Length: 257
Ligand SMILES: C[S@@+](CC[C@H](N)C(=O)[O-])C[C@H]1O[C@@H](n2cnc3c(N)ncnc32)[C@H](O)[C@@H]1O
Image (cartoon, rainbow, N blue to C red; front, side, top):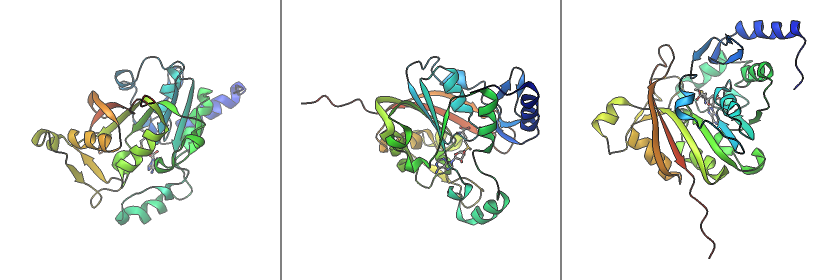
């Protein structure tokens, strides 16, 4: 991508800094977006150091933090998928109309575009719900996928994960980074359980315990889920929740008989 003339770049940075962001992203040396969520210290704990030769996917990319991190780790190509309209979200019915009204005129990819331009990124954004992912839309299968802070917003997390598994190469890796319920994890370490939040929060459906996240992964056909990290989301209240990162694999190809 061609670099903008210096004056234009400064204007672009100023416009970025004047907005509200979800992600903290370093858009120029020492300059970062004023994000609600700063995952910069988490990425090195959960992502592979080097993704050379791997096609990678970030599902529900929002401002693009994970996608840009995958690109920084030299992925051969990065596709960032997200909805093109907030009207396509599954916000719980009691709050949907109010939120849609508040966000009229906005869409989930508006800040991604700005960060993308400032970083000179080659990440390709694809407008797609997790449920509609397919290999054709992504330009081929991927070897590594990230699903971050998204399953809690879905009515059907297992169906969403199944679609991700279907776009992964055999043996491809998935990183899931989701909030978990601390008490349900302590009280029911083995029994899958989740809190249904849809009646008392604006955006969320479920927050499960570790066993629930594992069950979702297994039900969607993933194997070998391994915990990579547990952390408090580096964010202000009310989203400063406990998060867990799991890496799992799509099954390897069956040997032909
Ligand atoms: C809380 S943000 C998480 C952003 C980022 N993945 C992270 O881990 O920080 C949730 C994102 O999921 C997207 N999203 C919500 N429902 C979706 C769906 N059905 N399919 C794909 N993306 C969805 C939203 O548009 C938003 O970008």
